[in-house]
Image (cartoon, rainbow, N blue to C red; front, side, top):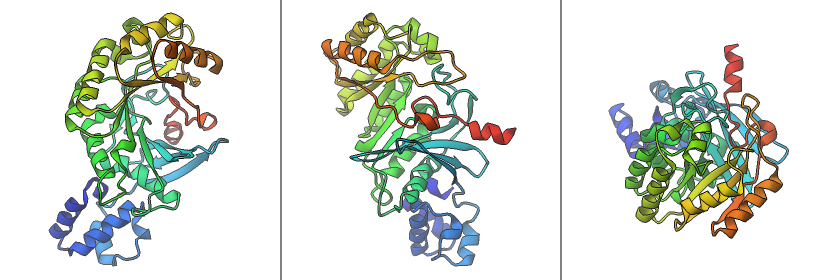
Length: 343
């Protein structure tokens, strides 16, 4: 697919298909502008016919708008699979939460995205396509960027699709293209330690976010199967190495689940674990997922948990919940429409 290619690779593609270099520029600009092939007006019919098989066929099929202005976009790919991405509007700009897989195989019990398991990985160009389509929806193009920040926190585990995610980071931050600064890109992982080490070697300027959600391994195993592979200590040690190598502050996501991880002792253990690490903890009251039997805490209790962390020397905040009424909030992304299509 042509959206998987860098500009230089697209130049090579054009040469291989007996097209002049300026055609590569036209095709690249069309893709970066989020255009469907039929919307591209500066390509002759014979060129369109030549590239039709390889031109990206992803598209927005539905948009949901929350009371708070958050928008959820249903993106469909050529094979009929769909993902959801979420646009959150802040004073400082527009943040898009993209998916990296169709479904997820991590099995976290508080998350709706994993209910159907992993269907397939997305290519770098399909991840990029979510950004380009929403950017176009907002009135932007490859040269006029409306998206300012990216979080890889939609459906899928980004580090479980390591090569394509890395390629996406390089494509979306390329100077010739939409050119979003790597400093404005966050990658959220449930803690694949081996892949964190590989990511460290890439020396990207992105923000690494860890979905931790517990301060004891046994408690983490109750809600996150990945805890049977990697201990909390191994994850935190990998984060210390990552910070030492990159100088990038680490963020930890901590979803509060009533009776599981929300006690004062949990806060004390968490502070001990993270002592001395340049990090910040995002505390998240559990969002409802009807297929799961876990109970969240009141926001007041979340603020008390944060107060405890701050007293213990940690930087922490309660994350603002956005888009919950359209199932676009943290942990709620799912393939409901795909299930409806399957009947």
